[in-house]
Image (tube, rainbow, N blue to C red):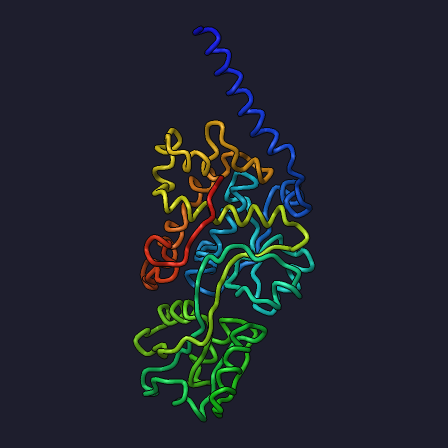
Length: 345
């Protein structure tokens, strides 16, 4: 009887292993994924001028919230979060860069919109930062509403949803506000600092970022108005849905890891967990996970160990001074936020 039981257990274990392997074998790698593997690195379009989200530090390294999602995808596919080549892109550069194959993906303060989703020929991944457009101005100007800017000028980055939104806001309120456009965020901010406009507008996170790093942050304020919804997240070519799935489930995995309390520091403690949800997330035991995506079954172990969960990434770049951004809408759904990941199952 004992011998028969042992045989059954061995057969079940073998079948489970075959199931995981079969799932991986049945996945056809997309063109972009295969190109990344052949090249040995991911090429990711990022910002280089928005502190907290994407900037080049004193050591010449790209760092930031958005940058870390590039590293997470590299870890998922290549097993190494350092295997990334970063391409700095302005707002106006993004469409051509993704359509022309200059980059494999973009993770750069990019709002998910209908026109971009379709005419750019891209697939947006999960929203990694829920934002809204705001207006920054000088405290000594003495205004508190957009209506009080009537007769003034406002600086904005061209080729962005920001430019379209501020135009709509001014037109709908029948205000006489002159819009001055600039090619990128640094030029827009500098024009405002130089006094070429009384106010400037972009996503509130971007305003907080640059106000916080100004010579005297106390000179600036953000008006109490939100002009739009700005769901920001990574995107990739529509031509490779398999690669898009890897991006999506990498982000979902980082959100789920935070839900489960799994961090880069304690990941090893969870590898022997008897919680089936955690086993599926980490691809341990006989659970298929990354094999569904054509990558290492335990890809999330690598991602969490090398990059961290969503909360770690947020805290590392946005939760510290000088930004100290509260999680707000970017908290987990269990904490009243909008972050909600589908199950690993």
